[in-house]
Image (cartoon, rainbow, N blue to C red; front, top):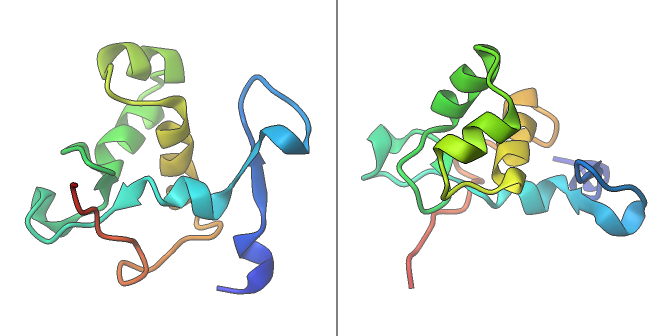
Length: 103
């Protein structure tokens, strides 16, 4: 992954300007792979909700608002992280995704 892709930004929905942009790397920190959780598949950090499950909801036409209402523990940035992860823009290999370690 080149240095330019790590510094790319994604605007926060509903805001404008560079101060409101989140880096793709920052968003991707919200996606983790833990060997003992969900068969080692990419999940929302700290949860047992797979990236694939969220993508299926989005592809079935669910809006961010509907998903956030149904999964109260989710944040909008985590949905954005799923989209960035899926898009391949700044996509990390499984070996580069940080493992979540609860404190």
